[in-house]
Amino acid sequence: MRAEIERFLYLEARLLDERRFEEWMNLFAEDGWYWVPAAPDQKDPYDGVSIFFDDRRIMKTRLERLDHPRIHSQKPASRTMHALSNIEIDEEHGEEGEVLVRSNLTMFEFRLDKQTVYGGRCRHSLRIRDGGGFEIAWKRVDLVNCDGVFETLSVPF
Amino acid sequence: MRGEPAMAALDDRALRGLVESDRVHRDFYTSPAVFELEMERIFGRAWLIVGHASQVPEPGDFVTATLCRHPVIMSRHADGEVHLMFNRCAHRGAQVCTEPRGNARRFECPYHGWVYETDGRHAGAPYPKRYASGFLKGGEFDLAKVPRMAVYRGFVFGCLSADGPGLDEFLGPMKSHIDAMVDRAPDGEVEACAGTFRYRFGANWKIQMENQNDLYHPMFTHASTTARDGTQFRRHGAEDDEAGRVRLLKENEALNEQWEELAIGGHRYGHTYMERFPMDRGQSGPVHERYRAAMEASYGERAAEAMAVKHHNSIFYPQWSIQYLTQHIRVMNPVSVDCTENVIIPLKLKGAPEEMWRAALRSNNNSHSPSGMVMSDDMEVWIRCQRGLASPGREWVVFARGMNEERIDNAGSFEGRGTSEANARHQHAAWLDYMCGEA
Ligand code: FES
Ligand SMILES: [Fe+2]
Image 1 (tube, rainbow over the protein chains, first blue to last red):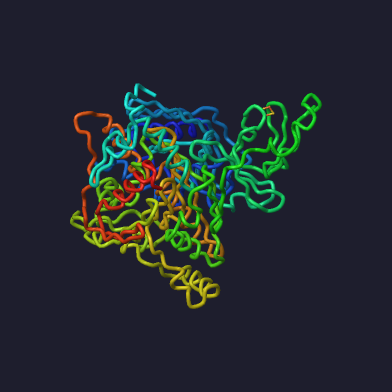
Image 2: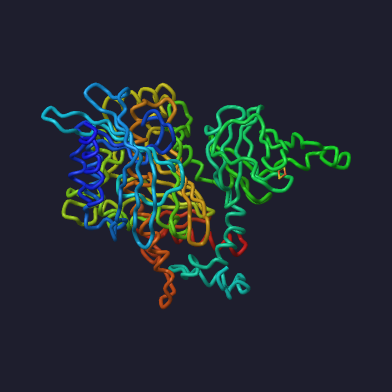
Protein backbone atom coordinates (compact mmCIF):
# COMPACT_ATOMS: atom_id res chain seq x y z
CA MET A 1 0.00 0.00 0.00
CA ARG A 2 2.68 2.49 1.00
CA ALA A 3 4.66 1.87 -2.18
CA GLU A 4 1.54 2.35 -4.24
CA ILE A 5 0.72 5.62 -2.49
CA GLU A 6 4.23 6.93 -3.01
CA ARG A 7 4.10 6.02 -6.67
CA PHE A 8 0.82 7.90 -7.00
CA LEU A 9 2.06 11.04 -5.27
CA TYR A 10 5.31 11.12 -7.24
CA LEU A 11 3.34 10.78 -10.44
CA GLU A 12 1.20 13.71 -9.37
CA ALA A 13 4.29 15.84 -8.73
CA ARG A 14 5.80 14.89 -12.06
CA LEU A 15 2.62 15.70 -14.01
CA LEU A 16 2.72 19.22 -12.54
CA ASP A 17 6.41 19.66 -13.31
CA GLU A 18 5.89 18.44 -16.86
CA ARG A 19 2.93 20.81 -17.21
CA ARG A 20 0.59 17.92 -17.99
CA PHE A 21 -2.20 19.79 -16.26
CA GLU A 22 -5.14 17.95 -17.72
CA GLU A 23 -3.71 14.61 -16.62
CA TRP A 24 -3.08 16.14 -13.21
CA MET A 25 -6.68 17.26 -12.94
CA ASN A 26 -7.87 13.81 -13.92
CA LEU A 27 -6.20 12.38 -10.84
CA PHE A 28 -8.96 14.11 -8.87
CA ALA A 29 -12.34 12.53 -8.28
CA GLU A 30 -15.29 14.16 -10.07
CA ASP A 31 -16.31 15.70 -6.74
CA GLY A 32 -12.70 16.29 -5.69
CA TRP A 33 -11.24 19.60 -4.60
CA TYR A 34 -7.89 21.30 -4.20
CA TRP A 35 -7.39 23.80 -1.39
CA VAL A 36 -4.54 26.12 -0.39
CA PRO A 37 -5.72 28.23 2.58
CA ALA A 38 -4.58 31.83 3.00
CA ALA A 39 -4.41 31.53 6.79
CA PRO A 40 -2.80 28.96 9.07
CA ASP A 41 -5.06 26.37 10.69
CA GLN A 42 -8.09 27.33 8.68
CA LYS A 43 -10.91 24.94 9.47
CA ASP A 44 -13.28 25.53 6.62
CA PRO A 45 -12.73 26.97 3.15
CA TYR A 46 -15.67 29.29 3.78
CA ASP A 47 -14.13 30.77 6.93
CA GLY A 48 -12.03 33.08 4.82
CA VAL A 49 -10.29 33.60 1.53
CA SER A 50 -8.00 30.99 -0.01
CA ILE A 51 -5.06 31.10 -2.36
CA PHE A 52 -6.63 28.22 -4.27
CA PHE A 53 -9.97 26.63 -3.56
CA ASP A 54 -10.87 24.77 -6.72
CA ASP A 55 -13.50 22.23 -7.51
CA ARG A 56 -13.16 20.39 -10.82
CA ARG A 57 -14.88 23.19 -12.70
CA ILE A 58 -12.62 25.98 -11.50
CA MET A 59 -9.64 23.67 -11.88
CA LYS A 60 -10.55 23.13 -15.51
CA THR A 61 -10.89 26.85 -16.17
CA ARG A 62 -7.60 27.53 -14.49
CA LEU A 63 -5.71 24.76 -16.23
CA GLU A 64 -7.12 25.55 -19.66
CA ARG A 65 -5.90 29.05 -19.07
CA LEU A 66 -2.40 27.73 -18.39
CA ASP A 67 -2.41 26.34 -21.92
CA HIS A 68 -3.86 29.51 -23.45
CA PRO A 69 -1.55 31.12 -26.02
CA ARG A 70 -2.09 34.56 -24.46
CA ILE A 71 -1.52 33.91 -20.78
CA HIS A 72 0.91 36.75 -20.20
CA SER A 73 1.82 35.83 -16.66
CA GLN A 74 3.20 32.53 -17.97
CA LYS A 75 5.30 34.01 -20.77
CA PRO A 76 7.82 32.60 -20.36
CA ALA A 77 6.31 29.66 -18.51
CA SER A 78 7.44 28.81 -14.99
CA ARG A 79 9.68 25.80 -14.58
CA THR A 80 8.91 23.97 -11.38
CA MET A 81 10.20 21.13 -9.27
CA HIS A 82 7.85 19.59 -6.71
CA ALA A 83 9.64 17.43 -4.13
CA LEU A 84 7.75 15.37 -1.56
CA SER A 85 9.13 13.99 1.65
CA ASN A 86 8.04 12.90 5.15
CA ILE A 87 5.23 10.81 3.76
CA GLU A 88 3.04 9.45 6.52
CA ILE A 89 -0.11 7.43 6.23
CA ASP A 90 -2.59 8.53 8.85
CA GLU A 91 -4.45 5.38 9.80
CA GLU A 92 -6.72 7.16 12.25
CA HIS A 93 -8.14 10.08 10.34
CA GLY A 94 -9.03 8.76 6.93
CA GLU A 95 -12.63 8.94 5.79
CA GLU A 96 -14.56 5.81 4.85
CA GLY A 97 -13.00 4.30 1.72
CA GLU A 98 -10.18 6.85 1.73
CA VAL A 99 -6.60 6.97 2.98
CA LEU A 100 -5.29 10.17 4.49
CA VAL A 101 -1.67 10.82 3.52
CA ARG A 102 0.48 13.58 4.97
CA SER A 103 3.61 14.82 3.29
CA ASN A 104 5.94 17.78 3.14
CA LEU A 105 6.24 19.67 -0.11
CA THR A 106 9.06 21.80 -1.44
CA MET A 107 8.43 23.56 -4.71
CA PHE A 108 11.02 25.48 -6.66
CA GLU A 109 9.71 27.82 -9.29
CA PHE A 110 11.90 29.56 -11.82
CA ARG A 111 10.67 32.28 -14.12
CA LEU A 112 12.25 35.40 -15.61
CA ASP A 113 15.62 35.04 -13.88
CA LYS A 114 14.07 34.56 -10.51
CA GLN A 115 13.86 31.41 -8.39
CA THR A 116 11.28 31.16 -5.64
CA VAL A 117 11.00 28.38 -3.08
CA TYR A 118 7.74 27.38 -1.43
CA GLY A 119 7.32 24.94 1.41
CA GLY A 120 4.15 23.43 2.79
CA ARG A 121 2.46 20.53 4.46
CA CYS A 122 0.19 18.50 2.24
CA ARG A 123 -2.71 16.31 3.05
CA HIS A 124 -4.16 14.06 0.38
CA SER A 125 -7.31 12.12 0.97
CA LEU A 126 -6.99 9.29 -1.54
CA ARG A 127 -10.10 7.39 -2.47
CA ILE A 128 -9.52 3.78 -3.31
CA ARG A 129 -10.97 3.08 -6.74
CA ASP A 130 -13.11 0.03 -7.33
CA GLY A 131 -10.80 -1.46 -9.90
CA GLY A 132 -7.70 -0.59 -7.85
CA GLY A 133 -5.61 2.55 -7.76
CA PHE A 134 -6.50 5.94 -6.28
CA GLU A 135 -8.20 9.18 -7.05
CA ILE A 136 -7.78 12.37 -5.04
CA ALA A 137 -10.89 13.09 -2.99
CA TRP A 138 -9.27 16.25 -1.71
CA LYS A 139 -5.84 17.78 -1.45
CA ARG A 140 -4.93 20.51 0.97
CA VAL A 141 -1.61 22.36 1.03
CA ASP A 142 -0.77 24.50 4.05
CA LEU A 143 2.05 26.76 2.93
CA VAL A 144 4.39 27.94 5.66
CA ASN A 145 3.95 31.47 4.28
CA CYS A 146 0.21 31.15 3.62
CA ASP A 147 -0.61 34.58 5.06
CA GLY A 148 2.55 36.24 3.78
CA VAL A 149 3.14 38.58 0.88
CA PHE A 150 3.12 36.79 -2.48
CA GLU A 151 4.06 37.46 -6.03
CA THR A 152 1.98 35.95 -8.81
CA LEU A 153 1.25 32.23 -8.53
CA SER A 154 0.22 30.21 -11.55
CA VAL A 155 1.24 26.59 -11.18
CA PRO A 156 -0.54 24.54 -8.47
CA PHE A 157 1.49 23.26 -5.52
CA MET B 1 19.13 57.16 -4.47
CA ARG B 2 20.80 55.76 -7.52
CA GLY B 3 22.49 58.81 -8.99
CA GLU B 4 19.62 61.21 -9.38
CA PRO B 5 21.08 64.44 -10.68
CA ALA B 6 17.59 65.81 -11.20
CA MET B 7 16.90 65.60 -7.45
CA ALA B 8 17.98 69.12 -6.62
CA ALA B 9 16.18 70.44 -9.64
CA LEU B 10 12.76 69.02 -8.77
CA ASP B 11 11.09 72.38 -8.46
CA ASP B 12 7.55 73.08 -9.60
CA ARG B 13 8.71 73.72 -13.12
CA ALA B 14 10.42 70.34 -13.37
CA LEU B 15 7.40 68.59 -11.87
CA ARG B 16 4.99 70.35 -14.21
CA GLY B 17 7.23 69.28 -17.07
CA LEU B 18 6.44 65.65 -16.32
CA VAL B 19 2.71 65.89 -16.97
CA GLU B 20 1.07 67.22 -20.10
CA SER B 21 -2.60 67.06 -20.94
CA ASP B 22 -2.33 63.89 -23.02
CA ARG B 23 0.96 62.35 -21.94
CA VAL B 24 3.33 61.90 -18.99
CA HIS B 25 7.09 61.63 -18.92
CA ARG B 26 8.58 58.25 -18.01
CA ASP B 27 10.34 59.82 -14.98
CA PHE B 28 6.84 60.08 -13.53
CA TYR B 29 7.11 56.32 -12.91
CA THR B 30 10.82 55.72 -12.61
CA SER B 31 12.42 58.58 -10.68
CA PRO B 32 13.16 57.78 -7.01
CA ALA B 33 13.26 61.51 -6.30
CA VAL B 34 9.76 61.98 -7.69
CA PHE B 35 8.61 59.02 -5.60
CA GLU B 36 10.02 60.52 -2.39
CA LEU B 37 8.24 63.78 -3.10
CA GLU B 38 4.99 61.91 -3.75
CA MET B 39 5.24 60.26 -0.36
CA GLU B 40 5.48 63.68 1.21
CA ARG B 41 3.09 65.70 -0.91
CA ILE B 42 0.45 63.15 -1.92
CA PHE B 43 0.54 60.33 0.63
CA GLY B 44 1.53 62.76 3.34
CA ARG B 45 -1.61 64.86 2.77
CA ALA B 46 -4.37 62.63 1.42
CA TRP B 47 -6.69 60.58 3.61
CA LEU B 48 -5.45 57.01 3.43
CA ILE B 49 -7.46 53.93 4.31
CA VAL B 50 -6.16 51.64 7.04
CA GLY B 51 -8.88 49.03 7.14
CA HIS B 52 -12.31 48.43 8.55
CA ALA B 53 -13.39 48.75 12.17
CA SER B 54 -14.84 45.22 12.05
CA GLN B 55 -11.26 43.92 11.92
CA VAL B 56 -11.04 44.90 15.59
CA PRO B 57 -14.50 44.06 16.97
CA GLU B 58 -13.63 43.56 20.67
CA PRO B 59 -11.82 45.77 23.22
CA GLY B 60 -8.10 44.99 23.04
CA ASP B 61 -8.30 43.77 19.42
CA PHE B 62 -5.64 45.19 17.16
CA VAL B 63 -4.23 44.84 13.67
CA THR B 64 -0.90 46.12 12.43
CA ALA B 65 -0.87 47.85 9.06
CA THR B 66 1.12 50.17 6.86
CA LEU B 67 0.22 53.78 6.28
CA CYS B 68 2.40 55.26 3.55
CA ARG B 69 5.37 53.05 4.48
CA HIS B 70 4.92 53.76 8.21
CA PRO B 71 4.03 50.87 10.53
CA VAL B 72 0.82 51.61 12.44
CA ILE B 73 -1.47 49.89 14.90
CA MET B 74 -5.23 50.07 14.66
CA SER B 75 -6.75 49.01 17.95
CA ARG B 76 -10.00 49.07 19.86
CA HIS B 77 -9.65 50.36 23.37
CA ALA B 78 -11.67 49.41 26.43
CA ASP B 79 -13.92 52.42 25.79
CA GLY B 80 -14.96 50.91 22.46
CA GLU B 81 -13.19 53.56 20.37
CA VAL B 82 -10.86 52.74 17.49
CA HIS B 83 -7.39 54.27 17.75
CA LEU B 84 -4.67 54.68 15.18
CA MET B 85 -1.09 55.14 16.27
CA PHE B 86 2.42 54.66 15.01
CA ASN B 87 3.95 51.33 15.88
CA ARG B 88 7.02 52.88 17.51
CA CYS B 89 8.03 52.86 21.12
CA ALA B 90 8.39 56.34 22.63
CA HIS B 91 11.63 55.27 24.30
CA ARG B 92 14.13 54.18 21.67
CA GLY B 93 11.89 53.43 18.76
CA ALA B 94 11.30 49.67 18.70
CA GLN B 95 8.07 48.39 17.16
CA VAL B 96 5.89 47.43 20.07
CA CYS B 97 3.72 45.04 18.14
CA THR B 98 4.64 42.60 15.37
CA GLU B 99 1.71 40.22 15.16
CA PRO B 100 -0.52 40.91 12.15
CA ARG B 101 -3.54 40.82 14.48
CA GLY B 102 -4.47 39.80 17.95
CA ASN B 103 -5.89 40.87 21.26
CA ALA B 104 -3.80 42.60 23.90
CA ARG B 105 -4.53 43.88 27.36
CA ARG B 106 -1.65 46.30 26.86
CA PHE B 107 1.20 46.68 24.38
CA GLU B 108 4.56 45.93 25.89
CA CYS B 109 7.75 46.99 24.17
CA PRO B 110 10.18 44.06 23.85
CA TYR B 111 13.28 46.20 24.33
CA HIS B 112 13.05 47.69 27.85
CA GLY B 113 9.52 46.82 28.74
CA TRP B 114 7.72 50.14 28.44
CA VAL B 115 3.98 49.55 28.46
CA TYR B 116 1.11 51.21 26.60
CA GLU B 117 -2.64 51.04 26.93
CA THR B 118 -4.57 49.93 23.85
CA ASP B 119 -5.40 53.58 23.17
CA GLY B 120 -1.67 54.33 23.05
CA ARG B 121 -1.37 55.98 26.48
CA HIS B 122 1.93 55.40 28.19
CA ALA B 123 1.22 53.07 31.11
CA GLY B 124 4.62 52.85 32.68
CA ALA B 125 8.32 52.12 32.38
CA PRO B 126 10.12 49.50 34.50
CA TYR B 127 12.34 50.82 37.33
CA PRO B 128 11.30 54.44 36.80
CA LYS B 129 13.41 55.78 39.68
CA ARG B 130 16.44 56.48 37.52
CA TYR B 131 14.45 59.03 35.55
CA ALA B 132 14.29 62.53 36.96
CA SER B 133 11.18 62.94 39.00
CA GLY B 134 8.20 63.84 36.86
CA PHE B 135 10.05 63.06 33.64
CA LEU B 136 7.72 60.28 32.51
CA LYS B 137 4.52 62.10 33.35
CA GLY B 138 2.20 64.11 31.25
CA GLY B 139 1.48 62.00 28.18
CA GLU B 140 4.70 62.90 26.47
CA PHE B 141 5.59 59.25 26.04
CA ASP B 142 2.35 57.94 24.63
CA LEU B 143 2.51 56.08 21.34
CA ALA B 144 2.33 58.87 18.78
CA LYS B 145 -1.09 59.14 17.21
CA VAL B 146 -1.50 59.36 13.46
CA PRO B 147 -2.21 63.11 13.22
CA ARG B 148 -5.79 62.67 12.09
CA MET B 149 -8.13 59.71 12.08
CA ALA B 150 -11.71 59.42 10.90
CA VAL B 151 -14.21 56.65 10.30
CA TYR B 152 -16.83 56.57 7.59
CA ARG B 153 -19.35 53.70 7.62
CA GLY B 154 -16.83 51.53 9.42
CA PHE B 155 -13.90 52.29 7.11
CA VAL B 156 -10.98 53.66 9.09
CA PHE B 157 -8.86 56.41 7.58
CA GLY B 158 -5.72 58.15 8.70
CA CYS B 159 -4.13 61.37 7.51
CA LEU B 160 -0.47 62.10 8.11
CA SER B 161 -1.03 65.81 7.98
CA ALA B 162 -2.68 67.70 10.83
CA ASP B 163 -4.33 70.14 8.49
CA GLY B 164 -5.97 70.05 5.10
CA PRO B 165 -9.46 69.00 4.08
CA GLY B 166 -11.44 66.81 6.46
CA LEU B 167 -12.42 63.30 5.40
CA ASP B 168 -15.88 64.49 4.48
CA GLU B 169 -14.59 67.05 2.05
CA PHE B 170 -11.88 64.73 0.76
CA LEU B 171 -14.37 62.00 -0.14
CA GLY B 172 -16.96 64.46 -1.45
CA PRO B 173 -19.38 62.80 -3.89
CA MET B 174 -17.38 59.56 -3.53
CA LYS B 175 -19.11 59.00 -0.19
CA SER B 176 -22.07 57.76 -2.18
CA HIS B 177 -19.79 55.09 -3.66
CA ILE B 178 -19.01 53.82 -0.17
CA ASP B 179 -22.70 54.00 0.70
CA ALA B 180 -23.52 52.00 -2.43
CA MET B 181 -21.34 49.19 -1.13
CA VAL B 182 -22.50 49.26 2.48
CA ASP B 183 -26.19 49.81 1.71
CA ARG B 184 -26.26 46.51 -0.19
CA ALA B 185 -26.14 44.82 3.21
CA PRO B 186 -29.59 44.23 4.70
CA ASP B 187 -28.14 45.25 8.10
CA GLY B 188 -26.55 48.37 6.59
CA GLU B 189 -23.08 47.23 7.60
CA VAL B 190 -20.21 45.34 6.05
CA GLU B 191 -17.76 43.16 7.89
CA ALA B 192 -14.12 42.38 7.10
CA CYS B 193 -14.13 38.87 8.53
CA ALA B 194 -12.49 36.76 5.82
CA GLY B 195 -8.84 37.62 6.26
CA THR B 196 -6.80 39.27 3.52
CA PHE B 197 -4.65 38.58 0.51
CA ARG B 198 -1.37 40.38 0.24
CA TYR B 199 0.82 40.61 -2.76
CA ARG B 200 3.63 42.65 -4.13
CA PHE B 201 4.61 43.51 -7.67
CA GLY B 202 7.49 45.35 -9.26
CA ALA B 203 5.78 48.44 -10.61
CA ASN B 204 5.13 52.02 -9.63
CA TRP B 205 1.89 52.61 -7.72
CA LYS B 206 0.45 54.90 -10.39
CA ILE B 207 0.53 52.18 -13.03
CA GLN B 208 -2.04 50.21 -11.03
CA MET B 209 -4.04 53.38 -10.36
CA GLU B 210 -4.28 54.08 -14.09
CA ASN B 211 -5.22 50.49 -14.83
CA GLN B 212 -8.24 49.97 -12.60
CA ASN B 213 -10.63 52.07 -14.66
CA ASP B 214 -8.98 51.19 -17.97
CA LEU B 215 -11.66 49.64 -20.14
CA TYR B 216 -9.27 49.46 -23.06
CA HIS B 217 -7.23 46.61 -21.60
CA PRO B 218 -9.45 43.70 -20.46
CA MET B 219 -9.88 41.99 -23.81
CA PHE B 220 -6.13 41.93 -24.33
CA THR B 221 -4.58 41.63 -20.88
CA HIS B 222 -7.22 39.13 -19.83
CA ALA B 223 -7.45 37.27 -23.15
CA SER B 224 -6.51 34.03 -21.40
CA THR B 225 -9.59 34.16 -19.17
CA THR B 226 -11.95 34.47 -22.10
CA ALA B 227 -13.84 31.45 -23.39
CA ARG B 228 -14.65 30.80 -27.01
CA ASP B 229 -18.01 32.51 -26.67
CA GLY B 230 -16.29 35.68 -25.48
CA THR B 231 -17.29 35.38 -21.83
CA GLN B 232 -14.95 35.36 -18.90
CA PHE B 233 -15.11 32.62 -16.27
CA ARG B 234 -17.83 33.02 -13.65
CA ARG B 235 -16.66 35.83 -11.48
CA HIS B 236 -19.44 35.28 -8.98
CA GLY B 237 -18.03 31.96 -7.88
CA ALA B 238 -18.67 28.45 -8.98
CA GLU B 239 -22.44 28.51 -8.99
CA ASP B 240 -24.53 28.06 -12.11
CA ASP B 241 -24.87 31.72 -12.61
CA GLU B 242 -24.76 32.94 -16.17
CA ALA B 243 -25.25 36.48 -14.91
CA GLY B 244 -21.82 36.27 -13.32
CA ARG B 245 -20.13 35.75 -16.65
CA VAL B 246 -18.63 38.91 -18.02
CA ARG B 247 -18.71 39.19 -21.78
CA LEU B 248 -15.35 40.60 -22.82
CA LEU B 249 -15.69 39.93 -26.50
CA LYS B 250 -18.37 39.14 -29.01
CA GLU B 251 -18.37 35.59 -30.23
CA ASN B 252 -16.26 36.52 -33.25
CA GLU B 253 -13.52 37.86 -30.96
CA ALA B 254 -14.36 41.44 -31.84
CA LEU B 255 -14.56 44.10 -29.16
CA ASN B 256 -17.89 44.03 -27.43
CA GLU B 257 -18.93 47.59 -28.18
CA GLN B 258 -21.04 47.69 -25.05
CA TRP B 259 -17.78 48.60 -23.36
CA GLU B 260 -17.78 51.92 -25.19
CA GLU B 261 -21.13 52.79 -23.67
CA LEU B 262 -20.06 52.45 -20.05
CA ALA B 263 -20.05 55.59 -17.98
CA ILE B 264 -16.75 56.60 -16.44
CA GLY B 265 -15.97 59.68 -14.45
CA GLY B 266 -14.32 61.27 -11.51
CA HIS B 267 -14.43 63.83 -8.76
CA ARG B 268 -12.13 66.22 -6.99
CA TYR B 269 -8.83 65.00 -5.49
CA GLY B 270 -8.28 62.47 -8.28
CA HIS B 271 -11.02 59.97 -7.44
CA THR B 272 -12.49 58.07 -10.39
CA TYR B 273 -15.02 55.33 -11.11
CA MET B 274 -16.60 53.28 -13.83
CA GLU B 275 -20.10 51.96 -14.21
CA ARG B 276 -20.79 48.31 -13.66
CA PHE B 277 -20.58 46.14 -16.75
CA PRO B 278 -23.96 45.95 -18.53
CA MET B 279 -23.32 42.26 -19.14
CA ASP B 280 -23.07 41.75 -15.41
CA ARG B 281 -26.81 41.81 -15.01
CA GLY B 282 -28.75 41.44 -11.83
CA GLN B 283 -29.15 38.09 -10.20
CA SER B 284 -32.12 35.81 -9.93
CA GLY B 285 -33.06 32.57 -8.23
CA PRO B 286 -34.11 31.51 -4.74
CA VAL B 287 -31.07 32.92 -2.92
CA HIS B 288 -31.57 36.26 -4.57
CA GLU B 289 -35.23 36.21 -3.58
CA ARG B 290 -34.24 35.72 0.05
CA TYR B 291 -31.81 38.59 -0.30
CA ARG B 292 -34.51 40.78 -1.81
CA ALA B 293 -36.85 39.92 1.05
CA ALA B 294 -34.20 40.82 3.63
CA MET B 295 -33.50 44.09 1.84
CA GLU B 296 -37.19 44.96 1.62
CA ALA B 297 -37.56 44.29 5.32
CA SER B 298 -34.77 46.76 6.04
CA TYR B 299 -35.16 49.39 3.37
CA GLY B 300 -38.80 49.22 2.33
CA GLU B 301 -39.32 51.16 -0.87
CA ARG B 302 -35.66 52.00 -1.15
CA ALA B 303 -34.72 48.31 -1.39
CA ALA B 304 -34.38 48.02 -5.17
CA GLU B 305 -32.22 51.15 -5.26
CA ALA B 306 -30.04 49.95 -2.38
CA MET B 307 -29.57 46.49 -3.88
CA ALA B 308 -28.42 47.71 -7.26
CA VAL B 309 -24.74 47.41 -8.12
CA LYS B 310 -24.04 50.74 -9.73
CA HIS B 311 -20.32 50.64 -10.33
CA HIS B 312 -17.75 48.09 -11.33
CA ASN B 313 -15.15 49.81 -9.22
CA SER B 314 -14.43 53.16 -7.62
CA ILE B 315 -10.92 54.41 -7.02
CA PHE B 316 -10.11 56.68 -4.12
CA TYR B 317 -6.94 58.42 -5.16
CA PRO B 318 -4.17 57.72 -4.28
CA GLN B 319 -4.43 54.51 -2.34
CA TRP B 320 -7.53 52.33 -2.39
CA SER B 321 -10.50 51.14 -4.37
CA ILE B 322 -13.79 49.35 -3.98
CA GLN B 323 -14.40 46.40 -6.30
CA TYR B 324 -18.13 45.81 -6.26
CA LEU B 325 -18.27 42.62 -8.31
CA THR B 326 -15.91 40.71 -6.05
CA GLN B 327 -17.01 42.65 -2.97
CA HIS B 328 -13.68 43.77 -1.62
CA ILE B 329 -11.55 46.81 -1.05
CA ARG B 330 -8.06 46.93 -2.46
CA VAL B 331 -5.50 48.88 -0.45
CA MET B 332 -2.47 49.82 -2.52
CA ASN B 333 0.61 50.73 -0.55
CA PRO B 334 3.64 52.08 -2.36
CA VAL B 335 6.86 50.41 -1.18
CA SER B 336 9.38 52.08 -3.47
CA VAL B 337 9.42 53.74 -6.87
CA ASP B 338 9.19 50.34 -8.56
CA CYS B 339 7.35 48.24 -6.01
CA THR B 340 3.78 48.26 -4.67
CA GLU B 341 2.06 46.06 -2.14
CA ASN B 342 -1.65 45.29 -2.28
CA VAL B 343 -3.92 44.18 0.51
CA ILE B 344 -7.26 42.73 -0.57
CA ILE B 345 -9.95 42.89 2.12
CA PRO B 346 -13.21 41.07 1.25
CA LEU B 347 -16.37 42.47 2.79
CA LYS B 348 -19.35 40.51 3.98
CA LEU B 349 -22.78 42.07 3.56
CA LYS B 350 -24.27 41.64 7.00
CA GLY B 351 -27.72 40.14 6.97
CA ALA B 352 -27.46 38.79 3.40
CA PRO B 353 -27.89 35.05 2.71
CA GLU B 354 -24.80 33.00 3.54
CA GLU B 355 -24.80 31.59 -0.01
CA MET B 356 -24.08 35.06 -1.39
CA TRP B 357 -21.10 35.41 0.91
CA ARG B 358 -19.77 32.01 -0.12
CA ALA B 359 -20.04 32.98 -3.76
CA ALA B 360 -18.23 36.25 -3.02
CA LEU B 361 -15.44 34.43 -1.24
CA ARG B 362 -14.98 32.03 -4.12
CA SER B 363 -15.06 34.88 -6.53
CA ASN B 364 -12.23 36.56 -4.60
CA ASN B 365 -10.26 33.32 -4.59
CA ASN B 366 -10.65 32.88 -8.33
CA SER B 367 -9.93 36.37 -9.49
CA HIS B 368 -8.01 38.27 -6.79
CA SER B 369 -5.91 35.83 -4.80
CA PRO B 370 -2.16 35.73 -5.56
CA SER B 371 -3.08 32.91 -7.95
CA GLY B 372 -6.09 34.88 -9.19
CA MET B 373 -6.85 34.49 -12.84
CA VAL B 374 -7.51 38.20 -13.26
CA MET B 375 -4.89 39.76 -11.01
CA SER B 376 -1.96 37.68 -12.24
CA ASP B 377 -2.19 39.00 -15.78
CA ASP B 378 -2.75 42.54 -14.54
CA MET B 379 0.36 42.37 -12.38
CA GLU B 380 2.32 40.93 -15.27
CA VAL B 381 1.52 43.88 -17.53
CA TRP B 382 2.23 46.43 -14.79
CA ILE B 383 5.64 44.88 -14.20
CA ARG B 384 6.29 44.93 -17.91
CA CYS B 385 5.41 48.64 -18.03
CA GLN B 386 7.89 49.37 -15.27
CA ARG B 387 10.60 47.40 -17.05
CA GLY B 388 9.79 48.90 -20.43
CA LEU B 389 9.88 52.42 -19.02
CA ALA B 390 13.50 51.90 -17.98
CA SER B 391 14.38 52.31 -21.64
CA PRO B 392 15.51 55.67 -22.94
CA GLY B 393 14.81 56.80 -26.47
CA ARG B 394 11.12 57.40 -26.08
CA GLU B 395 10.43 59.61 -23.13
CA TRP B 396 6.62 59.88 -23.12
CA VAL B 397 3.72 57.65 -22.15
CA VAL B 398 0.54 58.39 -24.10
CA PHE B 399 -2.92 58.95 -22.61
CA ALA B 400 -4.64 60.56 -25.59
CA ARG B 401 -7.49 58.12 -26.06
CA GLY B 402 -10.87 59.87 -26.09
CA MET B 403 -9.12 63.22 -25.61
CA ASN B 404 -11.44 66.16 -24.92
CA GLU B 405 -14.57 64.05 -25.08
CA GLU B 406 -15.26 64.27 -21.36
CA ARG B 407 -17.68 66.75 -19.86
CA ILE B 408 -16.08 68.68 -17.04
CA ASP B 409 -17.97 70.77 -14.46
CA ASN B 410 -16.78 73.56 -12.18
CA ALA B 411 -16.61 71.44 -9.05
CA GLY B 412 -13.75 69.31 -10.36
CA SER B 413 -15.96 66.44 -11.54
CA PHE B 414 -16.17 65.01 -15.04
CA GLU B 415 -18.08 62.38 -16.95
CA GLY B 416 -16.79 60.30 -19.82
CA ARG B 417 -17.50 57.12 -21.65
CA GLY B 418 -16.02 53.75 -22.50
CA THR B 419 -12.40 53.09 -23.33
CA SER B 420 -11.34 56.72 -23.04
CA GLU B 421 -8.23 57.37 -20.96
CA ALA B 422 -9.95 60.30 -19.25
CA ASN B 423 -9.78 58.70 -15.82
CA ALA B 424 -6.00 58.44 -15.95
CA ARG B 425 -5.81 62.05 -17.16
CA HIS B 426 -7.95 63.07 -14.21
CA GLN B 427 -5.53 61.33 -11.85
CA HIS B 428 -2.63 63.12 -13.53
CA ALA B 429 -4.29 66.47 -12.98
CA ALA B 430 -4.76 65.64 -9.29
CA TRP B 431 -1.13 64.60 -9.11
CA LEU B 432 -0.10 68.03 -10.35
CA ASP B 433 -2.35 69.72 -7.80
CA TYR B 434 -0.81 67.75 -4.97
CA MET B 435 2.75 68.00 -6.17
CA CYS B 436 2.72 71.66 -7.14
CA GLY B 437 0.93 72.91 -4.13
CA GLU B 438 -2.70 73.46 -5.00
CA ALA B 439 -4.35 70.50 -3.25
S1 FES C 1 12.69 50.92 23.00
FE1 FES C 1 10.81 50.42 23.88
S2 FES C 1 11.26 50.22 25.94
FE2 FES C 1 13.13 50.82 25.13
FE1 LIG D 1 -7.21 44.09 -15.50
